[in-house]
Image (cartoon, rainbow, N blue to C red; front, side):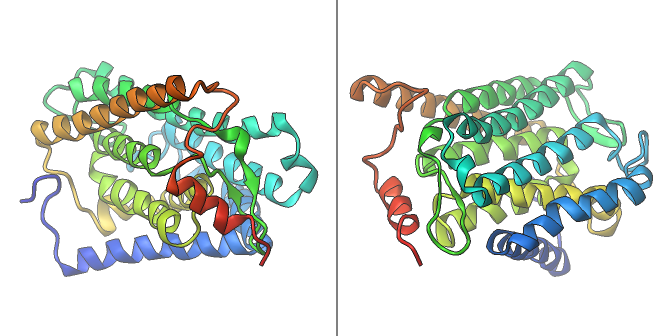
Length: 314
């Protein structure tokens, strides 16, 4: 038995790495080719919505994919992908200031959805753990802690006025002010959310899914975290809606169901996001910035590197 998860064998880790690299590969395909994005995020979802998901994600099904949250999360993630593609491929859109409100708005909405879910799990009152809608959950203070952490994470979304389209062939949506402190705080919060609310699926939708967008942000395409996140999230949730037995029957890796693990994971999330709020407001006050109009991290190495790599035509 591990600390967070029950032990798994080499086959289990092989499946995990296959999920990770598959998400990264499909993200690259959708990111670097216009038709790849259109196929994966428009044509395929339409087909699945009509012919597959009414069966595999029917309300009350035995895998828990028929909940309101799964359906809302699926289409909000797809809306983000398609909206970002519009910004990337329709030149006139990226020049309109009001359009730049869409990325932070869809991001905040996705975070808020998860916060509501954390609070909902607390409201279930299953202090010893139980299966609800065919998903194992355990209510506790960690739900409140992490719900608050998510709301703090929304507060520190910043610098969207600096969003632009990269000058290279991939035409990525670049958000240079979204640097590593926010990304790490988000990752800690989102992992805690998956651990709290989709516990026995979080080996994949927590660890693998978060790494599939964080790794490209640091090593493949800097400044494009939100685009990476939208793509990989949409890809994963479409897969789950289509093959709902994957995490429960085909390759299960359950959590240890240990209350201490739940508490520690959410505590780290809350501490990281609280620290980020304090640090960011300190910068805003010291540099006399407007949080809704100005970029916050323009003097940092991470910001400058993202600008350098995406403003030169290739």
